Image 1 (cartoon, rainbow, N blue to C red):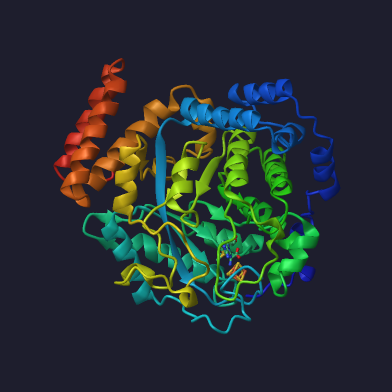
Image 2 (image 1 turned 30 degrees about the vertical axis):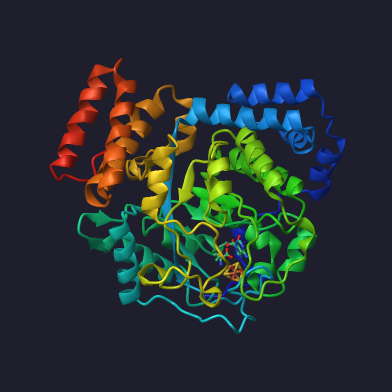
Length: 475
Ligand code: SAM
Ligand code: SF4
């Protein structure tokens, strides 16, 4: 169904914009950057308190190299003391690239006649999911263009189908969604299919820029998009992901707006967004954007560190849009999830050649490593890969908040689940070299449990059961 935002039900209309562009710019312009102030703000974040807009503005205005380094080191410390070394892995799966919108930056825009339009039929979906399972994936994000064909029932049907597809020991245990905003009734339909997170990126929170880069289609309506996740909340989806597409407008403004969006959720629904994404615009088929606001690597690294400090208990996602060197550097500043083995071409996971085809994908990705290469690199760099889906499946909502605020939560649940899901991967999918490295890493981490003999025995028991062939064991 195609929505006409002008004719929506009262409850939908009640949702109004909460972004005040003048307010955000005032905070940025009035920010007073001193060493003392920056140090105080970092200390506040390290004491596990969310930053205000005024404090975030001070950080985005910090230009002195030694103070920027302090911000990065603060983010690194926060990540280490709060979240530990885990990195959760997932993969995107493009379900259909039909689209009625014309977003300047996207290869799937309706006016791009060069792109091949594909919608996965049930058989294609089965093949793609089996291929992903055979690589060892357990968590997917399904991605859809905005088109009448991709209504709530279609989305729900594809989600249910993905959960049903099994290949060997493989299964998908969590399906997240990145699709257009819906109305409340339709969000309820999608929720009932058992989704994890519903992601909608505002792209740019700056109204005039938003209007300029969205040439036509429903997505041109700023307020309909901005309030999309409020309607999701009203429909009972309390696990939502926000994001901005960096490169469309001033990055400092977008960072403050993301913090404002977070505050809005906390104030109205008592729970912040589950995740924040910060894609940078990449090359795409028929790309046409103004280059004025392109974010360089230095500012990008800085903004990730600032976001970590500003919203300490929100998950942060870094995707394969970014090249390997940037991903490796930024991981340490507070990233909790990355995609691995990504292919965003339609039916791309069963394709033999690794060559990218711009005419079949939304934009170019820069990190083409396989999931196996990513896992090896994570282990080598002392991160712990995790495919954990326990909180969502046990109804433990507010997972990142618990990780952050419940003493011992990470040690009791997250770390053991990372170990168990890595062990499953090592048993079922790893080549001998990675299997050896992986178990070495697990043995090393097990030493952390020496002081809690009871828990240690429970984890070792589960590890033995996995080695004997049992699957899906978690705490
Ligand atoms: N069609 C839906 C929408 O627009 O929300 C969902 C899927 S869209 C395919 C997913 C996201 O990809 C968009 O929200 C946008 O942020 C991002 N994207 C689009 N074009 C991009 C580009 N050239 N570079 C990087 N990210 C891009
Ligand atoms: Fe369509 Fe989404 Fe691409 Fe916009 S970003 S053209 S809505 S697929």
